[in-house]
Amino acid sequence: MEKYEKAAEIFKAFGDPTRLMILKLLAENGSMCVCNIIDKLKKPQPTISHHLNILKKAGIVRARKEGTWNFYYIVDDRVKEIIKLVDEL
Image (tube, rainbow, N blue to C red; front, top):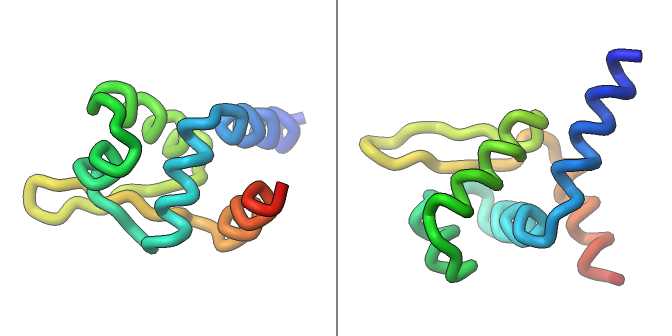
């Protein structure tokens, strides 16, 4: 049952257009600073941070700290394949 709960959490994380756009940016760029994601998506910092936390909690992205900045990246290359499929819709 636990793996299905984890799968449901991952599917929920994919279920938002802003989160999909964040994943697209990360898939294209490898890793990105939060400030760059905010700039590209033209959304406020609290909104982007909220969505990144959901993606992080689901295990889809991780962050590494460089100085005062957090750089986010996709954990599993299969996520990049899913984003490619979304682009083909």
